[in-house]
Length: 200
Image 1 (spheres, rainbow, N blue to C red):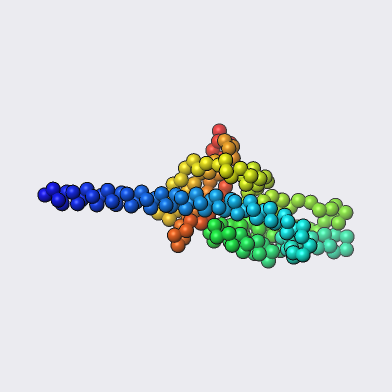
Image 2 (image 1 turned 180 degrees about the vertical axis):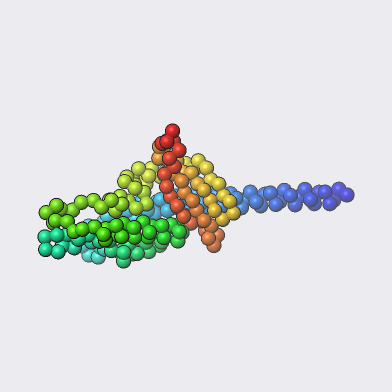
């Protein structure tokens, strides 16, 4: 009688230990995905600035300003947007859901601009709402990207192949990530500001 009970207890502990190890592995991978993407993006921004100033590298702007006589017609080059999305995908930290959301974001701006009238060239260039900010990190991406090391993971919740993560950099700069597990890798589906403390 003691032997079956001993075997049952042993199997419960080994199952619990395996489940805990698997959960810890997932948490480590989730943290790695988020931190690696933020660092990749930060370095990419530095390199992108260098590319824009390098005449030997062909640069494809997303915004096209076409001059027709004394007027300027604006448009969004969706081919350049696709190049941008391919580049983001090459980081290997973003899901197709994230990429598609960015595509729709740019397509909406493109559709809005398509309906706008040309403006006088004398008015000069002006910022286009939605394209005058970083498409992922907003108006001041350096508030996030320059303080990655100071950030802490406040909460990580995993349900099967989905994860919800709260990543705090300061009391105000707090962010939410959602991730999906694909082929044993965690990919970012969404990134946004956690407004809980701001609204308080």
